[in-house]
Image (tube, rainbow, N blue to C red; front, top):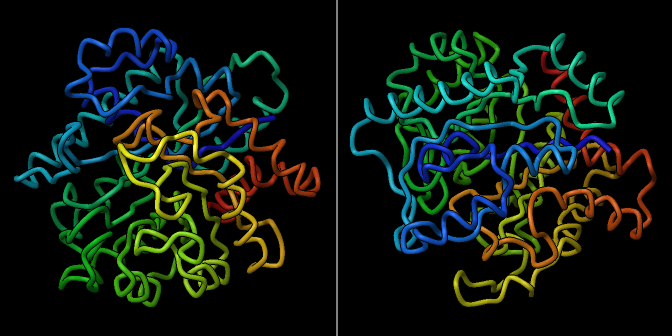
Length: 352
């Protein structure tokens, strides 16, 4: 089955860690053993492993952040440097397109063609499709710059990440939109850029949904009812997203999956893919159907295998999630929806 992963920081991983994503994961791990004092943990994602797992479509990000093993994600001190870093990451994707590894998906026509090609192919030969997103907004120097980014290929913006940002507040920093936040959202509406509600602080979430009129998604989010904390969605937020026709991608970061999980303390084996299905079940119960659930793993999003479910060796194992859903009684149609089609239909509607 084709799989759609709605959140991967591929260019950031390639550039931040000097990681050759053309290699299989096991070869990358072998090389990076020489740098285990810098790199958070064993990687789980490469283009080779995506292809082996038939992850044929991704939302791939531009991420203007710095990270080291012993430090949290931090902003660039200069927004101009963040701007430059994101254009550098964009150049990485374009190089992969030129190499034939990737295919950019900026519109519905390309999406439909790409899905049809992957559905008809069993060899994994087509390029991997990517929809370009930005996680956090310091790289956008002013709201008036949104048309420039859209013209460059950016189709989704998540204005928040960790901490306060130039346009809103994010995870761990309670607060609403900043003075320029409404203008940013209106510019996004004007050009047709989609809003990713992931990481928005609660007040920023509600204010953004009140102003932004276009399609909204939550690329990598789990449920606060199961794991407390402002990084997760409340049931009220889930209902609001459902009313807007959103799809919510299940995140595969262990501390977001199971309550009480501690980084570098709790064994990764204590979390399984079945625990992620609990979050999917919760959203389906609220929605009354399975049409608003998808996958947005965030694998290698500043961590590695040490912070991923114990029964997932690499991203090539994502297909195991379908078997778990089947055991829980999901229909073949619902499983296909969660694994890829719900995201495809979301973008077909958004780009109609």
